[in-house]
Image (cartoon, rainbow, N blue to C red; front, top):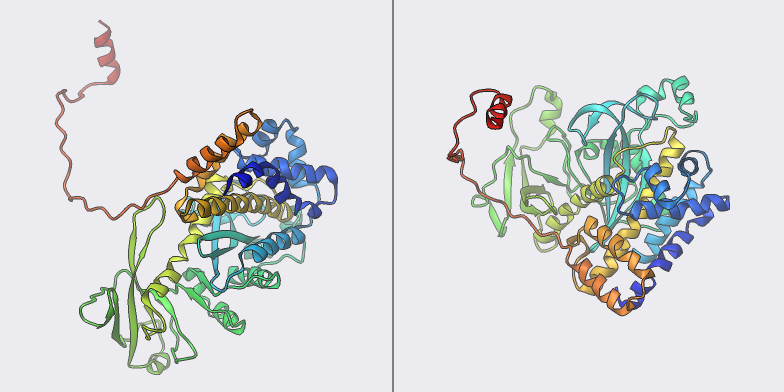
Length: 461
């Protein structure tokens, strides 16, 4: 990002939001768009409606109506966002990121809330689940679309749905079917994907995989270890993660390179859940390729795992390319983590599906705006956007924006801003090896052998 781009930073925010003004029918509704997005980009500790409204000098009730009562054209808003990405970031190497997330929620009135697995709390909990489609190309990544998951228990209870203002046409759809709807919409808006990536929650759904094949869409996904199928080259090729309980010795196979080998897997004994006919139809052995992959996630230790694939030709499918495709899967986690922790989308406040989507889209607009600024800054600083801290970029922006109104030299301001933004680099944390022993720290004090209050009374004497 050069000096002239920095100088036009504030007008660019208005220009960016101007693209979405046609999604709002009333002028006062359009004005609240800028207020809400600026609140998302601010340094407020809580980024719910009331703190944003008070910081902007707006009545909280007015901003609540912006999310809950005023009408939006959500279809046009999503299309506009995707058209912009297709215009600026189209690439034959783009990767689609499919993932879901859960937001803890108390009560039973919010659409879709029920006890289910909640990754945010790490247990079965009361929460709302949402499905997301992300986009990654080279060093740029963003979110394209989101949708609320309506469980079967809600869909079968239409009076409850009507009380929550859920229209009758909105019924239960499996998460993989929601994903296909998001995918088809992105394709219709001019986006294309070299590959889609997803976890075993989607890779374990044969109908989902068949639908991707029908759309001629390549994919790299995880599958459950209990999933069975037939591999008949060249119609079907897979790239899956090898289960961590299976040992891998790269000295025993046919070496193709460092951490890359061909191995022969023999058919194991028939498990109890498999029929004799299905077991007999499986081949006696398979020649597969094992590739070591190192997954580096900012702020976490580097993980090492092994992926297994039927892409056996090392020249046509280099190991580095296979590893890179699999690593792209982790960018979905990065998108959702930044969205939920930094922009605080970890708690949904609206009570109807239409308004919940309004919350989604406001967060998507703010999130993609920040990612775009990071991509421009990284290009000028000759670094990669994913090496810059999302939270650090937001904090730097908040710290420097007030200076735009000051009398300081703009050139000096620009230089300082670029230098500050470039310092927010998140380093890798390599695996650490610690001895399995207890630490013994000798203390010069005696052990506490009576209540703390007695000691305090003794000290007061």
